[in-house]
Image (cartoon, rainbow, N blue to C red):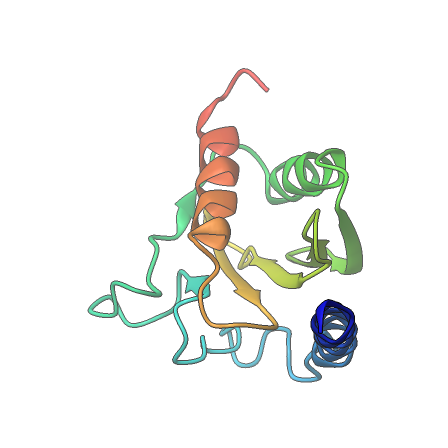
Length: 154
């Protein structure tokens, strides 16, 4: 009986990791379209500066920055890359897209930053690809970037 239970548990674990691997495919519609990043899904595992301000589950104020657009984008890129689990998928002046992998299971979050020309603000979208809740990971990641950009000594 114990062997059957162990076998079933192992099969469930394998199925779970296969599911995560297949569900972790990158969305094809990311990027900036007419000045906007993709909207957050209905699940609470996404934050965006361009979500409706009344949508407290998803909305997070844009980040105001000082300095040049290029310097700011380089600070963001350097910071996330130094965290050790991020990789840049696309980078051009004014837009950068990262994939950030979780430590344990390998969930992937899509993290985008948009710095419109002529405006000292960073818009962002940080969203989990899989699951329902992210336990505030995406919001915390953006809060750390906000703190980094608020510190003018960097």
